[in-house]
Amino acid sequence: MSEQIAVRLPEQLATSLDDLVTHGRFASRAEAVRAAIEQLVDAERRHRVGAAIADGYRRSPQTNEEVAAAAAAAQRSIEEEPW
Image (cartoon, rainbow, N blue to C red; front, side):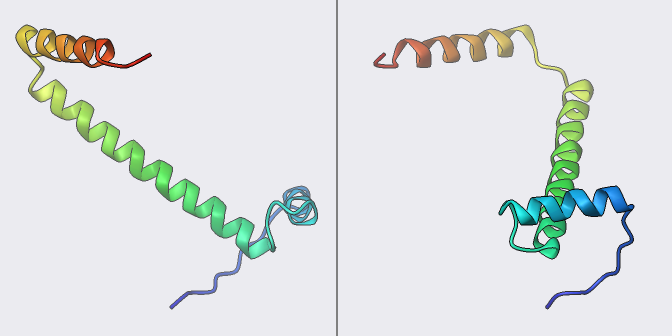
C-alpha cells in the first residue's frame, strides 16, 4: 500500500527536479522525490545508530587491552592479505 502526499516546491527546485527527469536520472518526479526521501530516512537512521554506538562507548569506554587486541587483530588480517 502507498500513500499519496501533496508537496509544494519553489519553482527553481521544481525545474531542477524536472531536469533530473529530462536527463534520465529518474523516470518521473515521483520517483525522484521517493528516492530523495528514502535517502533522507536512511541517513537519519544511520545517524541515530552512530549516535547510539558513540553513546555506548562514552558510557563504557574500551580498555587499553581491548584497543591493543583490536589493533593486533587488524594487523594480523592485513598481513594475511595476499597482496
